[in-house]
Image (cartoon, one colour):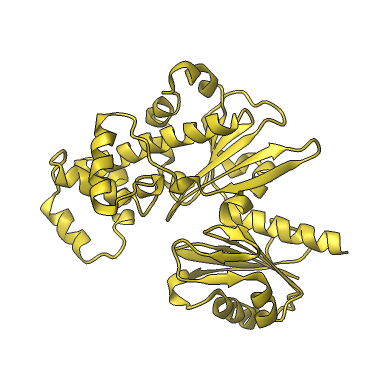
Amino acid sequence: MLIAGDIGGTKTLLALYAPETGARKPIVQTEFHSADYNSLDTMVRAFITQNKHPVQIACFDVAGPVIGGRAHLTNLPWVLDERAMQTALGLKRVTLLNDLKAMAYAVPHLLPDDVQTINEGRTEPQGPMALVAPGTGLGEAFLIWNGAAYIACSSEGGHADFGPADETQAALWRHVADRYGHVARERVCSGSGLPNIYDFLRDSGREPEPAAFAASLAGVSDRTPAIVQAALQDPSNTICTATLDLFVSILGAEAANLALTVMSTGGLYLGGGIPPRIIAHLQDGRFMRAFINKGRFADFLNKVPVKVITTQAALLGAALYGLDQIDRSA
């Protein structure tokens, strides 16, 4: 039996799988609030105790780089180690994957119902594929063909420099630089970055902040859900709609940066928690205008297929990877 997990900065999904039923049919799946636990070991023990199934192998995708079997999560105060977890949980093997590598591992296995199309484009068989995933943070990954199968490669591109595309974004850069010093892409292109855009529009006087909405945000630890909900449901709240519009433009430009970097003729995929919630805003033209706004490479980018992943791809990738390990050991 395999336990697979998608370990996020905000929430964690744990699920049990059997080789005979495969990665798309978990025996049981549970969502946990990550901050409620002081370690992944504690959470996994609770999950195993609740479900009373014998587990031999575990595969967890984590929101942070994995180096030498160790991971220090970017948005959680956890340090994970494969060997230490293997001993603590009494398992035969524990594997840690970067969450974007796990998500990328799932991309070649996605079904038509697992995605929604933003740009039809033209897929080149066995062409490189790129993945940009704004959630709590900003994840990026890519896939390359080795002659027999795709290899999933993780990256930390979300922490590279944010490059403004126009005067408004340049002013945003200055606003965020004053607050943080270094302006990583994640600071303006993620769930944790959305409030930075909101604050910039408010503080610069570009958009008024409704007093009632400001009061509703005052006691909230995470303002992002409220801002996105208002943008989607209340057109009169112009600061929230402007925040989401600017976010979509920044996301389009960043997705194009990665598509150009890896020449993703096999497609560009948008994952993470945010894109599935704002598909209408991604399909209204703003995203693609920013995506193809790359001068002489506009025609190339217009031919790149762009799709939003609407399934739990990271968990699917971790399950596929873990079940592949079971097959190899057998």
